[in-house]
Image 1: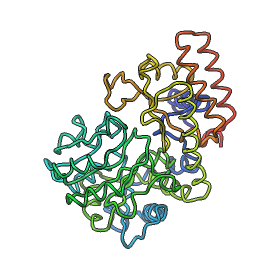
Image 2: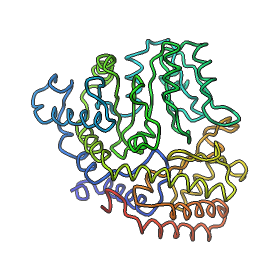
Image 3: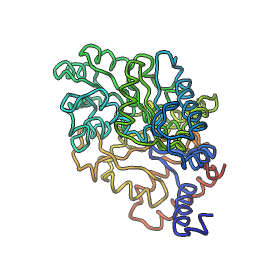
Image 4: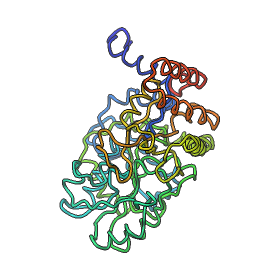
Length: 416
């Protein structure tokens, strides 16, 4: 149908399909959804407006919509083994940034103090960066990584919290390759009377599989996107202790959003069911195995890794010793079909637009069925591409090697 009605858009989608099939996706925040998730996301549920919450809608015709949303909420709590008597789920947020915004609006008044990890050291824009709403509307205090270990220093974070008395403390990161101790963050928050928000967007799937510490049951509020390691649609959810349920629900709707996207909520419900299986848990464990092998192989080839390695799904590479910038590396690897993103490193001396590092991750390639053997191949391909970036003949050979590897592993939602 699309091919006939809008061939231009169809051709662009086909081009992106080929890129995904014949390349290696190493951006740690990206993944492939199943055919079932795609079907739900593209369903006729997109036709229905449903402002409000189940059984409290402003429009009629909600018989099936209410069931979809209630099922998504139930499945989310079940996924994290949470008792609905004590915990509440909101599955309406459109994405991660709006979800964090809703939490802030519910808990913190404009001008009050929040505390989160610096963007350049692995935090997110919404954790208090000055160009973001979180840094403009609130007094944002930013904590840093230890300059020697490049890891979270909980004693220093605690001292900073005691000094500034934030109303909200945000834990979680977008470019931190080590385990986060949410229990320690909760203790810090309790000591200064703050609410603790755990942003687990990157690691939700790893938490489900038990290969990363969980923020439950002690954290006050948890936000996660539903793509990344959770392998669902591009969206987000909020889980909180019951005492925060009413204010957070009101902040989402009517505070920030109108009608929820029920086709996406249906896709989230499918994702939660898929993630609550032994097969998914095995997958998430393989993500970490693959990440560790990829890190080890890069170390063996002389690359400097921030913190010296990884505990999770991502690797942060400092390219300074190799005499290449993150932007140059991203462009070079794009040319051979390996997708990464340029990224700042702790104590970054360069511009964020052309930083010193690149960020790699294994969720998407693990979804294709790749394992430790393929990680060794990928490390070799990355190294060869960066070494031969000015040699067009070699770049062409490496591109073909990437295609040959990719062809061996089907892409969920495209080939399956």
